[in-house]
Amino acid sequence: MSTLPVTTLPNPFVTSLTVGIGGLISKAFVKLACSTEVVGSEHLINAWKEENRVRRGILTVSNHISVLDDPLMWGVLPMSSFFNSRQSRWTLGARDIMFTRPSHATFFRNGKVIDTIRGVGVYQEALDVAIERLNAGEWVHIFPQGFVRQETLGPPVGRLKWGVGRLLAECQNTPTVIPVWINGFENVMPAERGFPRFLPRLANLHIAFDDPSRLTSSLEEQRRLWRDSASDRKPTLEEWRGYHAELTSTIEQGMNYLGNKISLRSE
Image (cartoon, rainbow, N blue to C red; front, top):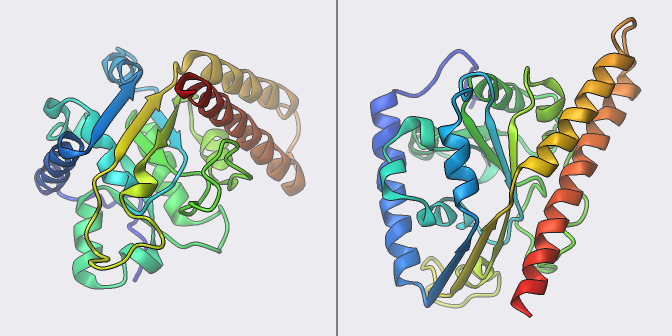
């Protein structure tokens, strides 16, 4: 099954309906959860309101601790955003989990999930699609750990995949980058859960959005220094990889900063 081409996007009406229904179900779940604490959601809402949104996308990055992190984590957002295509995220989803059947592929594509092949590296069409969406001023969310990680909830988040570095290196303008930290979602679908295995469990949920200004400014400066250094020559492949790694490291620091801040706040 091929990855969704950059030039082919889902039907906007079907997408809004799919994402909207998913949002309503997620909203119902977080309302029914034992408790749900949300910190800093205004940072994402303010990013939606930016007048230069057409020229500057939004990139959210978070730790990944449950197979239901997305879409449940977005249930904390305003209900008015669920059916608004400019206020719903694109995200990367593993082909071997989400795109195993034609019916599953159709559903997830309509839910703005980009078919991603794990293990083939960062130079694949899924990342091209994500870059195009950022260039169009849209919102892309990724889990840069690349997999669900319940054995070490962190912080620290551990080594991140370089895909996030490539997104930041190759998009036209530096997106507004918002770290997100979630806790409690690991209890919704614990790895060692019993029967009924397919049903989520109620849990105490915590989700925090960081102020994007500090991290976005750091990334913008890194991009500027790279452009200056590469303005009169063609960088080697190793230099490009080093650049991706540096940007990824900055994202890792930003996520750990938020995770540590939230951990101290909860003590």
